[in-house]
Structures are given as C-alpha cells and as structure tokens.
Length: 111
Image (cartoon, rainbow, N blue to C red):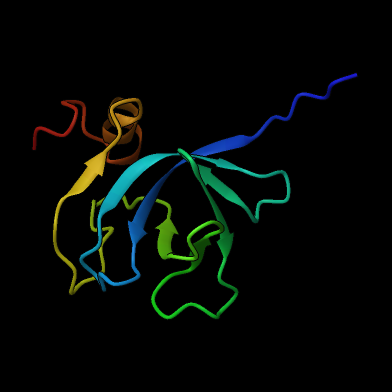
C-alpha cells in the first residue's frame, strides 16, 4: 500500500545569502513544510536548518549547501535586512493571497 505524504504549506520569504550578503535574490512563495517542521521544500530545493552554523542564513540547500534566509513575510513588506536592497519577486500563484491576507491590501499591492 502506498502512503501519500501530506505537507503543511505556508507563504514565506526566501533569500539567497551565500556570496550576496543582504542583496541576494529574494522571493515570496509557497513553501511545503515536512511533518517534523524542520525541512522546507520550495520548487526543486530542500532546505535544512543551519542550526547556528550559518554565517548569514538560517537554512541551507541540501544539494548545493548555499545559505538562505527564510522567514514568514512581514505585514509591512520589510522582509530584507535593513542594509539590504533589491527587488523581491512574488510568485504568481501566491500573489493575491500575499497582498490581501498578509499585507492587508485589497488592491493586490498597487500601493
């Protein structure tokens, strides 16, 4: 008998840290969370916690060992480090939910 795995999902902020400091490519997207809550899955990536070993990140990509910062997105949209800059891409499949449920804007982020 084949057991189907179910995952909790959550919209999260994900930023590549290694080699980019606070200016790495950043996204808002839907992350799948393992049953234990320790492993995050986003697109083709699997993230494990750095456990305090990271220099700038709190998770690392299991395949590449690159560090990432991942957290829940902030209502005010200030997800990047205060010294960081650059665009934060929002995945189209979560855009409406992000702007209305998280940011509280009825106009899907126009303001």
